[in-house]
Image 1: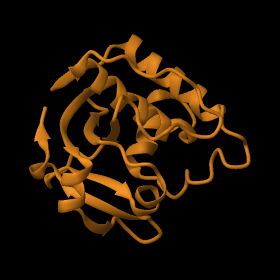
Image 2: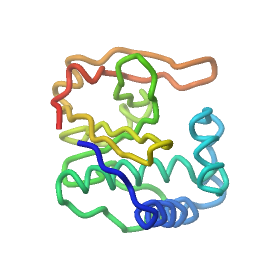
Image 3: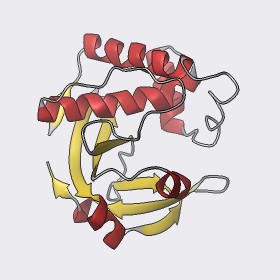
Image 4: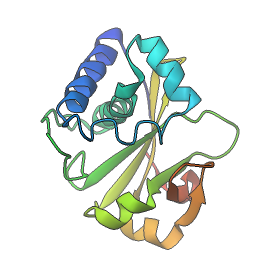
Length: 173
């Protein structure tokens, strides 16, 4: 399910992302920012005319907004000083990707996150196309099915180890 985002929706997502980011204590606010840097987030920060440090939260909100548009459920606007429960909607954690290449989209969960957080019932995979300003809700997968299909993958030197599943094993939305 694709949705073209308006300037108003993009502004909303950026404002909520900045509030979420800035609510974190300065001692750990940018702890993982460099670990997750990539060309897409760098270009996105340039497009949005905002510092790179906000891009992880911005992409998260964009994914939540897409899921909200697909399901009619409201985006959780509560601001947490440490972190939320890991669920973006009741029983659902949304993961947002920006990959637009020829290969199959993948849902990735960092191994450390997977092993330390309370598992959601379902993961949703959303993709953001910054050029078209479109969000595409690609699919969902239960935690049980994720566990059955997950493989370990690292996306580059210095990047975290992830569990991944391809879109082809997920339920289309």
